[in-house]
Amino acid sequence: MSETMKAVDIKGGKGPISALFINTIPRPAPSGSQALVRVRCFGLNRMDLIQREGHYPLPPQAPTTLGVEFSGEIVAFGSSSSSNGFQVGDAVFGLCYGGAYAEYVAVSTAMLVHKPAELSWEQAAGVPETWITALQGLYLVGGYQPGQSVLWHAGASSVSIAGIQLSVADGAKAVYATTRSEEKCRFCETELGATQAFNAGEGAEPWDQQVLKATQGKGVDLIVDFMGAGYFGQNLNAAALDGHIVNLGMLTGSKMAGGEDISAFVRKRLRFEGSGLRSRDETYQGKLRDQLVDHALPKFKDGTFKVLVDKVFPWEKIQEAHQLMESNKTKGKIICKIDW
Image 1 (tube, one colour):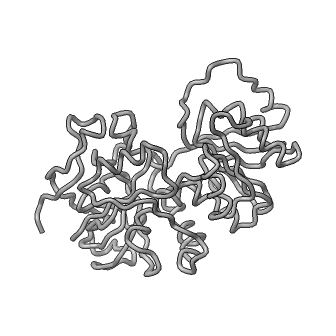
Image 2 (cartoon, helix red, strand yellow; image 1 turned 180 degrees about the vertical axis):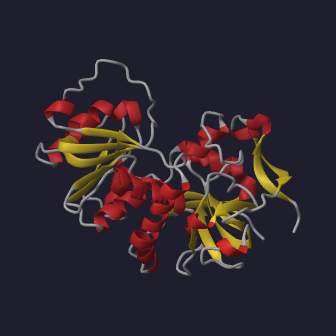
Image 3 (cartoon, rainbow, N blue to C red; image 1 turned 180 degrees about the horizontal axis):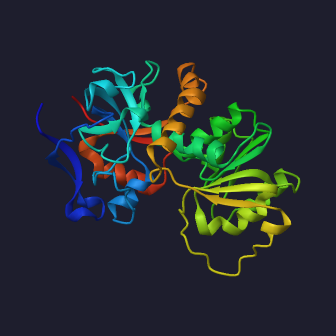
C-alpha cells in the first residue's frame, strides 16, 4: 500500500470554492483502536464550507483535510486487539473528526457502523453526521419524550429531514418545520410526514405567528434551531410553556440587532440550550453512534426511514458540489463518489 494518497486540499489553507483541488498527501496510519478505511463516498456538510473559508475551529485531533462522514471498506487496523467486532474487508460507514475528503481515512472503530445491504454507498455516506446530529438535538440535548410537539427549522436540510422522520416515528404529538419556499414546505409534509410546514421566506406571514395559529396559541414543546440570531425572538414566541429550544447552528448569524424581549424565559419557563458535535469527545459521540444503531438502523433496513440524496458528484467535481451546497437549493444530501 502506498504511503501517499489523493485528497481534496485548499490552496493557501483556506479560501473560496476555486481554491479546492485534489492533491497528493501522506496517507494516515491507524493507531490504537482506529481502522483505516478506503473511502468510496463522502458526504458534504455546511461546516465544510465554513472550514474551507477558515472560520471553523477544528478540534485538536482533527486533520486539516475536510469531511466528517464517509462510507467505504476497512483495509487495516491500528491494533488487531482493538478491532471492535470489525474485520478487514467489512463495508462500513462512519463519523470522523475530519479527513473524509480523501481516498483513505483513519477513524475510531467506535464510530463505525456495518453498512446494511439495503443502503447504497452513496446513501450510507450521508447518514453519520446528519442522523447523529438529529439524534443529539432530539434526544440527548432536547430530552424529547413521545407525545411532545417538535419544530425543526430548515426543514429540507439533511439534519431536519432526519429529525422530522425520527420525531414522527417516535410518537410526537405534532411535527412542524420551517423552510423558505412553498415547494420545500410541501416536501416536508408529503415526503417526510410533517404535520405542517411553514414558509419562512420573504413576504410570508412571520413563521412564529403561523406556528401559534396552528397550535391554537400554545406553541411548540421542543424547537431544534440551526438559524441562530435571526430566529431568536421568534423562537421565544413560538415556544410552549416549559418549552426547550436547542440551538445547533447560526445560519442567520450570531449577533442580534438589539431590543429583543427575553421576558419569555421567565413567563414561559423556557430553556435555551446550545450544543455541538464535532468538538465532543469519542465517548459522547459513541453514545450517539449507538443510538443511531438502535433507533435508526433497523428502520433504514425496512425502508421506514428515507436517506435522501439530492445529487452525487464524482469527487473530481468537488468545486461544483460546494457550489450546489452554497445555493441552498437542495432537499437532501450532496455526496461525492471516489471510483476504484
